[in-house]
Image (cartoon, rainbow, N blue to C red; front, side):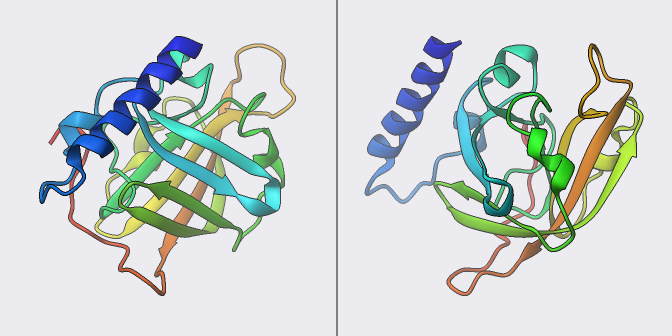
Length: 178
């Protein structure tokens, strides 16, 4: 797992170096490989600070938060889905409140979201990841927080984009795989 994280970080750095001075931004294809670093997520009030890798399978979630396949990427319109385990990176979500600020940093900039709701759903309720025209963020973790073994529910955090003073939040609509 550590090798995967190191290799992904090196690939991202290599892409950044190779694209410096070029007019072409790094494409979705270059970051859609499972395990590639796509962002860094922070929730200051809860002391959450975690890298976000592409993918949401066990190999990714063992070392970081994961960008859920098929959801938008930060900085684009649509719903960005990010998952992490409750017993590692997202355990503090038990204390999340409306208006808490979440920052997702990428090579395209920092994108700020404000929490507007939480809910508890069945693991099969993928409707929480529906695509939207607006820039939104959905965090997913297992529930209950102190449950032993496979959790019967999912804890969902919904947040909406907060316009930054120094740059617009929306770049262009797209989802991974487009």
